[in-house]
Image (cartoon, rainbow, N blue to C red; front, side):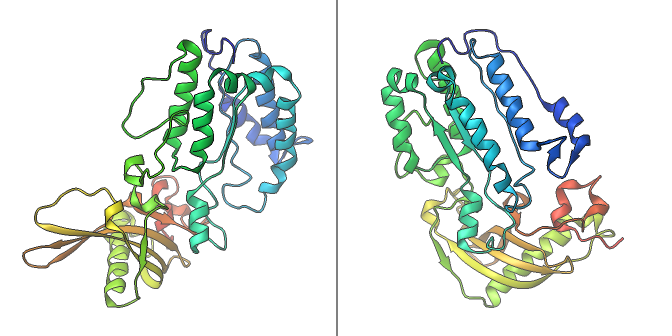
Length: 340
């Protein structure tokens, strides 16, 4: 890390290579090498090229795990070789901080509907290797890094950490960047940090206490309101291409604990948040998770349910069932079962 980022940064993008090489991928191989090995070698080449200047690089590999967890094991040996490459070079081992991480856990496994499956999907893997020179030069930051392994973290915190890493090497001080929601892993993160404080919406928060609800007329009504929201709002303009959905089954329904959720204060309303897992008809058994806000008017007791596309997750594959809208409405494929 000595003198890292002190030279003008060179921007190197592998997108052209990725697009070009995709034409030659057969199975998981390019020629006689796995796709993963080719990408790791690209990373090794990049690191060697900037070995004496300092560098920052991000390499993303998705095709082995994006739609299934069954093939991720094929990356093991290639990842091991990549780690051995860094470990075998004293310069890299002493000077390079290495992050190995995922953006999310498995989304479509057989256990996805379980609480365990939900936790795995929302708690992706993160491992950080701190080199010797960092530990010696920044002992307090390293101590915080170790302490924060048991804290609530977000991808925004990783970004803030990278900014700090650059700033530390430039001036010996942490970044002044403050977006109001991210905390560096080099600073002490509060043990009782809430999802609201971290900027995590209730739909994606795994720290909320949940009260399980009985499946009754109320929960059935909420599920039907959700399906109606899809039909009358999300796929309204393409309903001639997509099947009209119906509620098939409610797997789970929970009330989310209010004191851990950041609420706006409404003078005339009482609000509750619910989390559901349901299955729908007419779209090959589409399974969804959604979070909904219930507003109850204090004066007349009328109820309104507020849905938001951002807080809806499809938790089983839709495959090619939505190919008819793939070109023009790709963001709505999870809700559509083509009838044309």
